[in-house]
Amino acid sequence: MSIDCSRRTPVAPRIVLSVSFLAVLGLLVWAFSQMRSDHWEEVARAQAYLDHGEVDLAFQAISGIRDDRPGAAEGLTLAARALLMRGNIPTARRVLERTLLMKREQPEAAKMLAAIYLAAGDGQRAIALLEMAARLEPGDFRPWYALGKVFHDTGELDRSAGAYSEALRRNPPAAESREARIGRARAQLDSNHPEEAVEDLIALRRETPDDPMVLAMAASQARERGRPEEALELANRALAADPASCEALMVRARVRIRARETQRAIDDLEAALRAKPDDRAALQLLSQCQMSLGLMREAKTTMERADRARKRIELMDRLSKTIDERPEDPEPRWRLGQAAMDGQMYVLAYQCFQAALYLDPNYKPARQSLEALRSVKGFDPGSLQASQVRPFAGPEANRR
Image 1 (cartoon, rainbow, N blue to C red):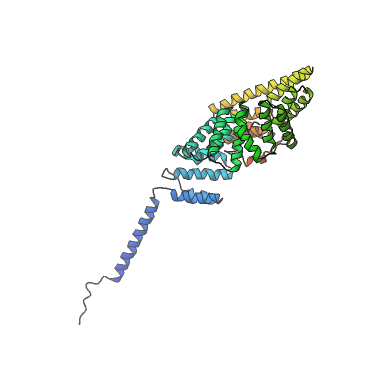
Image 2 (cartoon, one colour):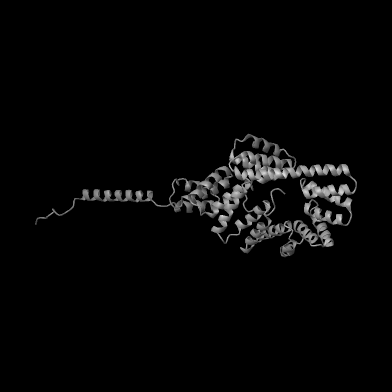
């Protein structure tokens, strides 16, 4: 019997066809992977790495992002976060500015860049970014918390109190809630509205009855409400815990002036000025007390010192406006740092010199001034470096 083999496919060609098909399929899969329309996979990996502190792996995950496909802007934001974790603030700033040009609606990028602007003295640009972040994430307390501090530092006390109120409405954690209450009460006291601070101070004293800062604020409130005996008792309690509390010393000095205990008031005012050498209110009160005791030479010296402090503050205000007008120029930041250093406001001076160097790492005057500041007795810049960019620090102003 014969066998018909004419319809059989030869084995070798069939194998060739299979191999060719797999090769083409592999090529198509590779081509498709290269033509992916977004970067979300890289973003997810980088986010996971950063959440575990793996900065190098995060950089690797987003190293291939070089276009504007979906996820590219978010990838750059994660790169900026990684740079901040490394302490590379100048590069992080440039990356954040670029990513927000690519995609404006990024609240985390806005908050990080606002923090950098605040550290560099760019208050107005920081405010705009924080307000944008608050609109994009209406449930987040942090932009309002930061705005409360910024508005207080710029003297917009009603806006400061309002911003802290907005932060508190969003139920922040206990520590931040306490700081927001302190900030709001401080703004209300500084704007001569002691009655509005009653509720916050009651809550704060209930939580921390022996906190010297809270006791000093309560003493200030009691004095402004016409309760000198209560004010004196609270100021003494604050000073027992913190003998250098400028606010408590000022309250006690004012109560003693009213009681005609002028020399004791002078002692308190001199102690307050050791804590805050440029406090104009303390200088003015001291000169008045000295004149009332016939100490005319001492009063003249104090008045001259007060005049220098006034001129220094006016200069600093002018330089702050210049910074807003010339945000990329290191020179006004350096000059502001010099003025702060003259007034022994060393934290502010350090931040100003660092901000000038962020803009121009080779700016020699700022580098020289920073070296001079490092030699100031009792000042430790090392304790500030780790927190140089802290967008949501407490309500205490840098100038204090």
